Amino acid sequence: MTADSTRKTFFHILLAVVTIALCWILLPFFGAVFWGTILAIVFQPMQRYLAVRLGKRRNMATLITLLGTILIVILPLAMVAATMVQEVATAYTRLQAFQPHATEYLQHGIQMLPVWMQDSLAKFGLNDIAGIQKRLTDGAATISQFVAAKALSIGQNTFDFVVSFGVMLYLVFFLLRDGAEISRRIRRALPLEAEPKEHLIAKFSTVVRATVKGNIAVAAVQGFLGGLIFMVLGIQGALLWGVLMAFLSLLPAIGASIVWVPAAIYFFAIGAIWKGVILVLFCAVVIGLIDNLLRPILVGKDVGMPDWCVLISTLGGMAIFGINGFVIGPLIAALFMASWDLYARDEEA
Image (cartoon, rainbow, N blue to C red):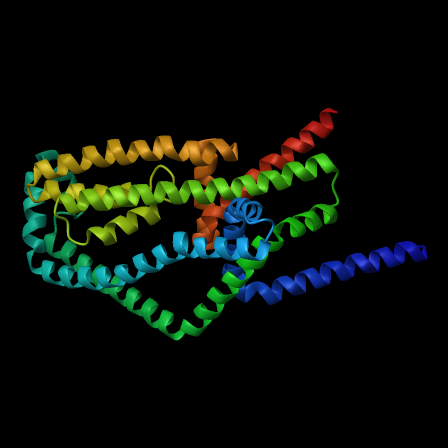
């Protein structure tokens, strides 16, 4: 082995070691770094526009963009989260008050079913109202314990949250201001030819913007409409259910139905047939139409992936990475498809 190859091998090993070490150091702030990067990519066009309008004053343009990010994204999320805490406490109190009437409602609902369906429920032991009520009570207790544990954990980790939040805002500012230079350095460092390099970087930025803006827009619209129809029909805790529908709407095609289908079944069970029909029609037609039309336009069209691929990659990403996965999953899938497309073109050439 020559001296030049030895030095090159040593340098590559050193490069891998320091890269892994940096990732290990940043791991406790993974969420802050990840969302700081995502917000910087999403709001970069706004920063560039303001920089041009303000005569290339990058610091001022970046500061205005950061304030816009806080007003558009962070403050609304904080207000919704604070309201949700109150809604969860109220919902738990109502659930406790509802328990004495649970047996009556369940019995009434079973009696309304056709005979063949009642026989089917009996085969599986689902006509045992006392047993069902016990399971519901145990489930409510488990949920309340989980919420209490999470609230205690959040209280204990307030300092960590504040630090991570500060790191995220700090990172957003400098990524917005110096994003062009950072992008140029990444382009120079990637050991690829110019065309595939530009293709992959463009795909990365496009997928991030389309996934974040598309999924959040769809989730916000579905959550708002779901909470609105719940409020109109007199369902208590409409805000809580709307936020839950918005969160579950991150799962394409199936998300919001997890909330409104049980609510419709509840209306039918207690004899509120018209409310059940209105809820089913509104959610299936209006909310379903939003999911089927708006999501492919905002997400699938720009990402360049079929709907089934967006769904599976989103589900898989959230299963592995939690809430971060609704971005990471489609991003990995899009880069996978783009990389293999480039490889196939090279093989054909």
